[in-house]
Image 1 (cartoon, rainbow, N blue to C red):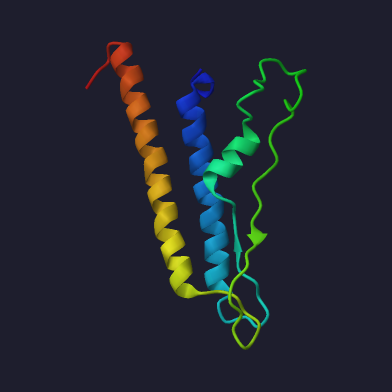
Image 2 (tube, rainbow, N blue to C red):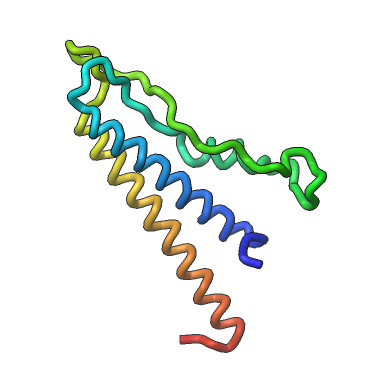
Length: 127
């Protein structure tokens, strides 16, 4: 039922994106001192959401194009300044990205909570 609501689908996609991106950030921080390691990151949420859910085509039946599911999110190597040892991880930049991701995840949770409250209210089980 809930997956049919656009706002719930978007919140789920945002939470998934935030979790995957936080994993990439954690991997970057873990390899901050590894020689030759190249930092990874995901494209921004708007880009990945548009790629995953094309606004012009809607999948309403299993036989429709693209109904098998969206491609999984994968971190890609990002460009950045290289340290003398070939490492491109900047701990300061990773911490800033981690704060952004936390805000995105908190927003997704807020949307879930608000939607659940609206459903409870509609069912007469309000606070």
